[in-house]
Length: 332
Ligand code: 5GP
Ligand code: MN
Image (tube, rainbow, N blue to C red):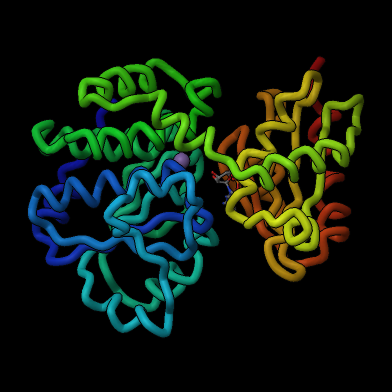
């Protein structure tokens, strides 16, 4: 896959200080992109900082032993944003996904570059490389770095790229685990990364509380439409009772989709008082980003989401009819 990196390369080479950021509730792909880019820029003697709207899940902490990733605090950081003369936004398809940092950056006129792989990208940027055939945003970052010089790639950068690739392809299981994904993975192995160790960091380091709550959730899943639709809710009270942090919930929706016969799984997670995050996963017969888009969200064909302000019950009543309708339209 070849993209036109030239304008982006000339921008980054002439930048004084670069801001790197990704979407709210960052995942392995957003964090991997930032970390890979940060260490690459460091090797090029270009100063950059990683600042995100939200905290990131503990399972990715191994990627950042130097703790360079910062969380944005408007009162403390807003004035400082003016020091940056270029912004990289990774893995973000929709403006609602940039969080408070995105809102504040929109008030400043700093040139921006977006690198992403969502099928629809609505981000307004000065330069963009968006390719929905790329299995992860980190693959695009990897391509950009290679374009400048493979000599810059080291184990830490390769590991960060691999984490985005592994998590966004569901460990090379999802439909985006294409030839390109395996080719990049095999190239990354040249840098002495250890896929099994990375897998253990990300997927075998869950707290007992998180797994116990998953057990409870499994008892409460609602099955509809001949069990093709599986949905469940998690309230703030549920989290509190279980002693589980919000950022530990990633992966529940994927797990419920793995049940035989289920085509679409939906999670309704109360992230704040009357603020609900909805996550969709599909096995491939239902395009779920179309459902999410009806409520201001979006995402990939088979992994999508949205956030709305209302009660858990009202949001289920609002969203589920659309999910049922989409399932009824599955061609036999
Ligand atoms: P998750 O279920 O892991 O929170 O999100 C799955 C995917 O859906 C994300 O990778 C992202 O592409 C998309 N997504 C989740 N929430 C939103 C949202 O509020 N707006 C948009 N545009 N996409 C979302
Ligand atoms: Mn991604």
